Length: 147
Image (cartoon, rainbow, N blue to C red; front, top):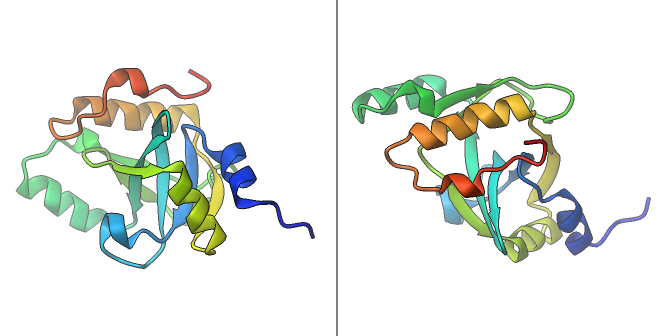
């Protein structure tokens, strides 16, 4: 099997809606790999949202902070997204990461491309982001390739 250069792989997978599983202790404080979804791209800056399986903890956090549940979007696994279990996306937070950081993570074996979410799921996440009083990503960046 031919191994493709990391720069090539990221160039050909980095789109709005892409799902990566990666280690990102600099973003979320744990080395445990998590699923992230690319929700916006602005030049070399990429903005990702985090997926979690810990619905009860997120719901408790939302209740404690008086956050609207529209910012907690469920995503079920399907043949396109590569998720292994139902996940919830907290649309109140996003994580900026550069293309070069993604390339480095792939080179170091701590990033995997797992797939892409549907336009329907993306639109639910976009709605959660736009309704958030915390997330400040501008609407003009929230464009899915199929939109």
